[in-house]
Amino acid sequence: MKRVIVVFPAKNEAKTIAQCIEIARQSKYQPEVLVVDGYSTDSTRKEARAAGAVVIEQSAGIYPAKGRAMQDGIKEAIKRKAGVIVFLDADIVNLTPEWVDLLAEPVLERACDMSRGYYRRAEYDGAVTKLIAKPLSWIFFPEIAYINQPLSGEICATAELFRNVIKSKDCPDGWGIDIWLLIEAAMKGYDIKEVYLGTKVHTSRQDYLVDVVRLAKMAEQVNMTAIKEAIKFKRIDNLKKVHL
Ligand SMILES: Nc1nc2c(ncn2[C@@H]2O[C@H](COP(=O)(O)OP(=O)(O)O)[C@@H](O)[C@H]2O)c(=O)[nH]1
Ligand SMILES: [Mg+2]
Image 1 (tube, rainbow, N blue to C red):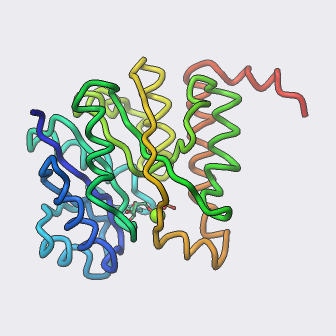
Image 2: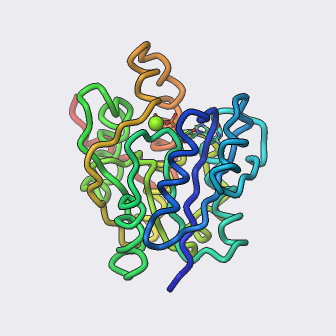
């Protein structure tokens, strides 16, 4: 059986990280858990170590750096002989061990190369997905139009897929990483399946409810990444067919 490693990118997640790690470790695949910390100013690193995770610092003190953290996590997981890598967000309040099982199983059983969690979402959650990622996918990359949640943080793939995809020089360091990984994997012909995980409750949503402008950087980076990808894959002319 391939070795499963769960990776949490985490910046200032002291409230939720320990519980997330403990739950992930209860997966039937007995994964090693790795946390890629983004220079947290709270006790995230301490909590993570106490909960049994291996903790590394992301390779640059920049923000936003979810993409950099994922790249670092992939490299570290491969060093640790991962066959399959599962990414989970560290701010999930209702994580269960089955999330890891459901994500890893189809990849371990070769039913697909990449699995992606999708959820039932609250009306006000997923604004960047609904308003940017989905409409841009429809225009530029109809091959991923079937994906409900192109920005899901809960994804799993073979270490081989991740290694192959992130070697590209244009791999984003910030919030563009999720849509970028999806487009790159799809364009390389990998088989991608979504896995239903029920409801996702996460603390970051509370921030956005206070002021939607907190999503501005993410929106900008997802937007720019999708457009850059459209240029790279010669899809930008698809815009000519869009009636406004
Ligand atoms: N290492 C690292 N992790 C980050 C950074 N920014 C966000 N994260 C983590 O990435 C995950 C997703 O971020 P979150 O704020 O929940 O975004 P959202 O739920 O997609 O709106 C969480 O586990 C964050 O702690 C960063 O700059 N560095
Ligand atoms: Mg979140």
